[in-house]
Every structure is written in structure tokens, then in C-alpha cells.
Image 1 (tube, rainbow, N blue to C red):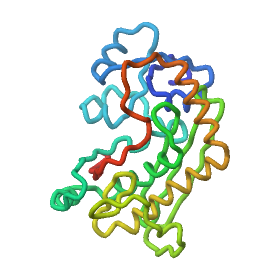
Image 2 (image 1 turned 90 degrees about the horizontal axis):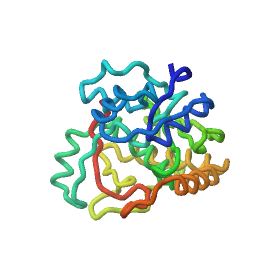
Image 3 (image 1 turned 120 degrees about the vertical axis):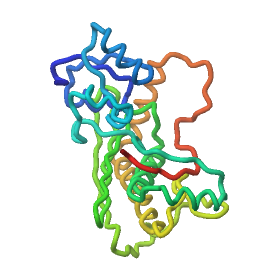
Length: 256
């Protein structure tokens, strides 16, 4: 369907990946919440499709509006996309214990790996960075990539680690540098009880994958994309975000 229509998205990440596969695609930008975007689509005469996250559409009860799901070989998702998180005061052990009971272990491990990947790349919403994470019974696989804005440049790599066998390498067992008042945090995510070892490995996996891409020139692709995006973007009135992951304490809940 994508190769024969004019799609609409405001996501640099999605448009860059799809342009890589379909270089002749002409994207139209659309903004607003989901109901606004669907209304604009229904009224539009210059584009015929929206590229959206399925999770949000399904949560809103609009699954019937989805005509095609994009596989990870075509379009990977953003870091942490689909995960729900609860922020908590640093050092509040009582609340953290309560939150741990509703946290999903697989989602938490995925989020740790993905956020470590993004943080090491020093990426953000101003450059196309995407991931796809898969948790198996005894392994964790992280696929990540960076693209130029027009999709002409691409770096994608996949790494897998074992999660049930002990890893005695010094790098994989070294905890992250940031230490909270009461516990280690992984890019702002508090470890679940009995999951610190797996989360440490997931954190190292994200860092290792990012470093592999950096060694191949990902930093230059990201630098050029950010510069081009700055030129193309209209000036904002104010901004308080630096585009990097902030160290907010949170526990991902689920990825329905």
C-alpha cells in the first residue's frame, strides 16, 4: 500500500526509514492528537494514509482504522515506544516497592536496553533513531539503527545476549555510573527486585550496540541530521529540553 499512496507523518524516524525502502515517497506532515489526525485524514485530498504507532491507536479502540502493520524490517519504533511508566521520587523505597508489584519485567528490561542505546548515541527526537527489542526465555535481542533525514544513509545492527547464564566479563557486570540515594538506576529506570543482573546486562547491551554504530560513523549521520533538522524547523518560542534522555526515576508497566 505504501508504495502507491502519499502517506502522512510528523515523525522524522518513520519517514527516514520508509524513504530508505521507498525513495519516491512524498510525505505530508500532520500534527495533533489521534482524533485530530484521523479527522484531517478523512478531510484530506493531498494524502491518503497516516503512519502511526499501533499501540496508541489500539488503546483508543480504533483498531479498525489500521489497514497495514509495518514490520521491523520496514520501520522500527522509537526508544521506549509503547511502554507505560510511573515516575517516583528518588529514594522513596515504599512507593518503589508498590510500583515493583505492577511492573512488567520484560518491558523493563527492554526499556533499559533501548534507553542505554539512545543515551550512548546522544540521540533524540531531532534525528532518526529507531530500535526493535525482543525478549526470549533465555536471551535478549536488540536491533537498532540511525538514518539520514532522506533515508539515503543507514546504519543498522543487531546484538543478542544471554540472560540466564552468568556473564563474568568485567564490562557486562559493571553497574552504571549514576547511583541513586537508595539504589542503582539505569538511564532513570529503577531495577526490579531480583532483576538487577539482567538489567545490568541489558544496559551494557544497549551501550555496546550504540558503540558499534558509532564506530561505523553513526555520529556523523546524526550530526548531519540534527543540523539539517534545525535548519528546516521553524524557530520555537521557548525550549527546556536538550533532546537527551533525562534521569527521571520510573518503572515501565506494560507494552500492550
